[in-house]
Length: 143
Image (tube, rainbow, N blue to C red; front, side, top):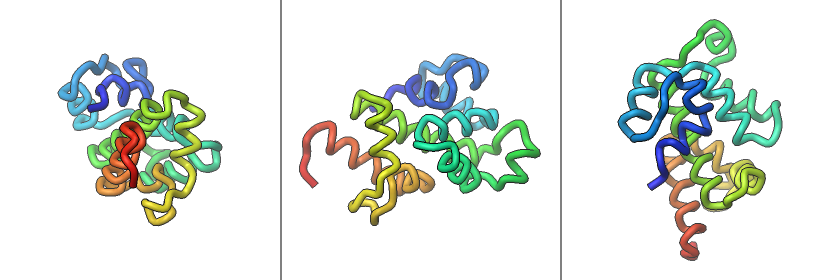
């Protein structure tokens, strides 16, 4: 299982989240109370290949006007942010290289109906499927 601190690091770490995340309980507490909106921006900047792609994904998580108006995300928006960060952290772990992970995250994948894994991560089931693909890649299990 991926360490919660790796997921928190993708979202900006203690500096953005306001506390150190060392356990799943810490991560859940941060998500439940609502993440700072900067956590979403940093997550997408880390996983996307361009600022335009990051902005497009951001407004799929939260409408533009709402994002500009708020300082914190709702619990649901925070859960989506954590889910995307979890897939990014898993890809970085498997590829052991941020650029290679970003490349994999943003390219259409045939086992995800030709959607990029980052896009699939917008839903819980899509994120699970992307994580399963990463697990198979890591362990060398054929499709």
